[in-house]
Length: 310
Length: 291
Image (cartoon, rainbow over all chains, first blue to last red; front, side, top):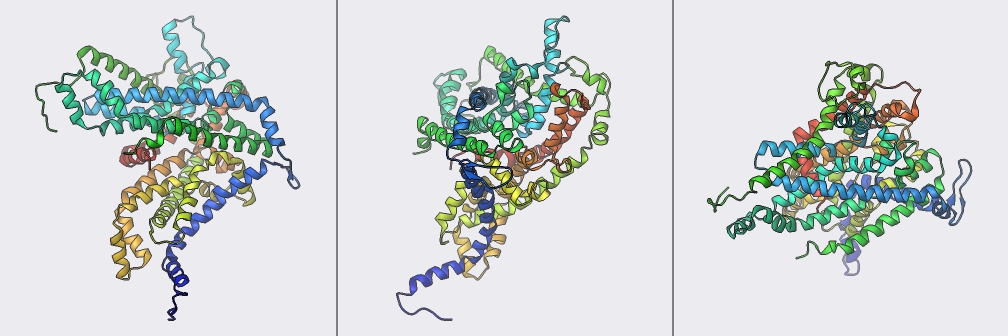
């Protein structure tokens, strides 16, 4: 064992010893580092590079400047997909937010434990399921012989002729927004309820001693106290607006694509099935940048970062 | 529960309560009736399932839909594919997340800051936006249409690593330090001190990631074209597509069989919900809370 004797050599010796001491830690890190480099960083870099290239099926890719970006900006399919993304995404988020909040506020007033947990489970379960399940379910419910038409027939009488909901462009966005919120409302309700449970019960007690009605307590105690959670939920929702692939992949079809095809789905069909790698990666890079900007702006606007500062 | 104000009943008035129950009842029915309809249709005959009406009760109970999905659609293969890929992937993910979480709590680790940002930054890169390049990379590595590809993609997530790190930080650092002074190896400290305390964390990661993998659509849709590697969501998509109006002419899967396939893909998740609800909910509320 050769201990370094001079003060000059002690510093590197210390580092070497620290590295040696942590050798198992680095060994544990190794698979994670390899994974992230291969599956996160490399694709990110490759995507950005490809967006400036003309990628061909055969032969080498050539540098093509901004032509892919020009293609994306001038292609009406992309601008249409952008509009669809915003309308369906924001519509879904707003409906889901209100729906989830309503569930949480109402459930909080339910004293019967069995009813409470039954309702919470039923509203939460759709969130747990994949879009292939939820989408498949609603496609059948909206089919001409499905439950929705059955219900309308019950209401409107026998002369009612069934509507082919899933291929009717005028219903398409409403259906996506409704089913999206149907799937996610229970999840938001869980988040809101968790916040409501955390409110100090003594606030309610003193309010009721002061003669405030329960309804007033809901609006003046419960709601203000869960504003921080609302902000978190809003951030999650806003960041998710751009990233709704599964629903359109399962529920979209040729007769409604003009109304519901969103950016992610268009990027997928352009890149994977049509092999237009350049435009698709340019589109993906733009959505990535847009997502980062939107979440940064939303953070600022909602003063999100101050929320938990004491 | 202590009641300080026994005299005052802090509740809504009777009319308000009625309205609350009505709204809640309506919401409940909107959520429950569609799911009930799935169960009824899946256990009806193809003829009854295709008839018009609300279909909230059986005219004839029948398991022919379930028979159809196993004999004609051959759903067993995609079901086992999903089960295999999700289970193996999740187990590896739990182990690696624990490793990475443990790395992140080492206070004296040289390069700790760089390693932390290296891992955290991956959470800023949405996997769905690098999909095209992920496809190309998988092609270069010959991972398309393979179980290895299905398992490897999405194997590690920053979220699970953070979750494990949070559990590990609750273990007093001095405990590990004194074990180290006593000459315990790093693996023993990790395995005998940290892992046992963090069992709920491991369970949370397991169930959350299993649900995520079981439901995954985009990655399998990108990586797999051969039917023998289809996972359940892809098979369901293929079954639904056949009933699509624009695809008329193809052999149609009857509605009761589709509903049966939906029930079958839901059962494992319902089991998890019933037996591991606590872990699912804690993980999901944690995912939405700020650091």
